[in-house]
Length: 242
Image 1 (cartoon, rainbow, N blue to C red):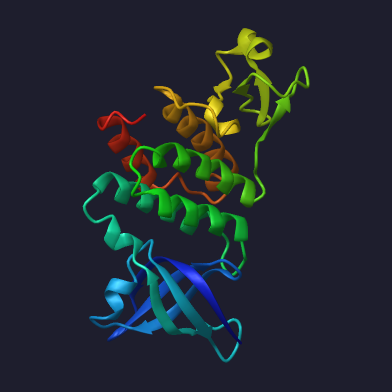
Image 2: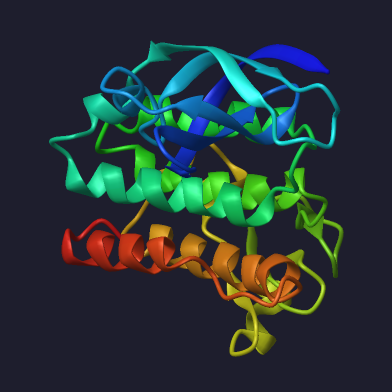
């Protein structure tokens, strides 16, 4: 069995003497591991967030297999070396994909969303809001998306301001106001890409996505949310970016 595809590097770990197991996330084949030879030229390629052109081969489909070729096409990790906040965002996004996406299952929409997010990270002003939307997109790509298209009470499509933690459905401000103490706030930019991002909106979007990521994905796996995500939120708070 073999395939060739473009992929985002998720990480690598030692595997015996002089070898590594690289973990890649390809558009058409999903999250795959494979053996590569460790060397001075290989290690920089396998920095999380880089885009590579990779071929995977194995005699049997259930085997670990190996990557060849493994060619760097976009050195995103290198471009973010001088931006600790963006690196924290990259680490968190990668950790979520590694923890949530099933192995060897394609998620083309999630791959595209992760690509857009990584490419936007040098733009310091826009990526935190885009990151929050990425988390909601991850939920949708894995089959746990929220219904943010219309109000669950009135059917209206404008003025959505709340989300039910029980159903994941949206409500307008007026419909949800009597129950505001138990609802999650829905920032306007989440459902309207033209809406401005006001102070506190990114924090509310993180709270919304985090609630459902934990309840619908990571609790089912017996895990909490990745520590990298907590560190990202902490760094964004210190930087006044929430």
